Amino acid sequence: MLNAEPSPRAQMNTIKVSNESLSALDEHDGTRLGDWLVNRGLIDRYQLFAALNRSFHDGCRLGDAIVALDYLPRDVVELEASDHVAQFGSD
Image (cartoon, rainbow, N blue to C red; front, side, top):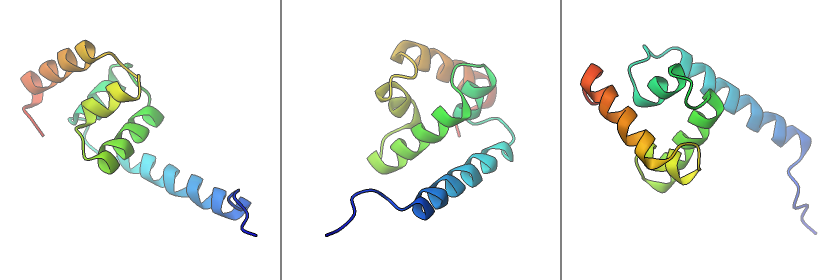
């Protein structure tokens, strides 16, 4: 019979990968929309990482993933995206 629960070692590996990915976000210059939202205190880094994962797996835009995960309402994401584009252009 297969064990439905991941082993403790598999769980540690998952956490390690997640932490490495989050650290990589710190190395960016802060001009991407996700960084913009984190820097403005609207979402935290863990929410950004979860939204980036959802965006990648679902093939949707980051803002759509943030809304789908109920981190921010659509009107806030659209306003922030507009402000972000006005300051940095699109990325």
